[in-house]
Image (cartoon, rainbow, N blue to C red):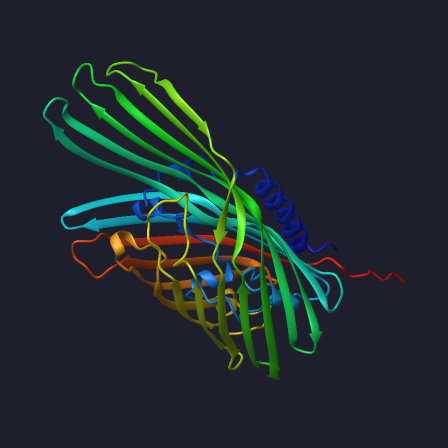
Length: 427
């Protein structure tokens, strides 16, 4: 008799893969986001997230799993079983709150997070690939001034877009427990900025300057892990990642337009196709530990650093700061038995992170703090399931006159683990 659970789950696998291919990576809903600091540099960075680590403080250096894909450290692909196929996809719901003095504003949006697949080629060689965000730009800033002739002059600054990354990676287990890996990332996307000046006075032109920047190019990142098992339920992994300073292409255009109050359309005054330039992605490194103490408990600790201090973007005078992050994550699973009750098979995780942002507005350093929780709900009779994570984070400078940002994020992800590479025997 056919296994109804497996038939259902195979159908679910195909359906999710099909829907993922049809879903635009940057949906129209993303345009509602308002992150004022994303006007600096490449915007809000998102490239160190994957499904498993979102509920564990963001640890990613030493984490490895046979049923999950850690694309931050490609050496972890060696943990994927030699007869398995892993697929993951994540949906994000973001809620942002900014406060500066008595002024408060809020925004929210929903976006597709990551799509990842992983599979082995041999017992010592594994591959993974996928699509995920690298950075996000989204802001609307308004200001005004009074002019003797023009009256009240309004200023509007807007930014939108982002950079995505398509990655392909592999890991090689050189000897028992020691693996190395590399990811090739293709960065692509568009960063759009607009500045508008307007007045209600008759005869005063409304002026708009738009700047569009198309980013594209390849970068590479490296990883290494050493995994040591002491028993069936006790093991330790040491991991590290590194990426040298690398460049990608950026092609920019600028358009200057104007119109009189009451007119519907702008007249184009000037349009410039700027020469293609190189955008430098700073060097980074990270290291961490991850260990399982018994059947129930596991924990990890990470440190990451990136050299943004010398970063320049479009010859702007903005200052940037070297970023770092320290993260701690724990996981608790009541039992590992596949056919236990649902509550006992669920996994629970939590984590903390603290660090420094690469944003440096007006020369002020910004610190970040986050706390996260997650749970994994398995599907009966399989190692696949649904993961739900929540994170609250805060970013500020400690100065009451500067803006404080509060971030609330919920992500729901599907993790599919199936055995695809088994030779069937018939008698």
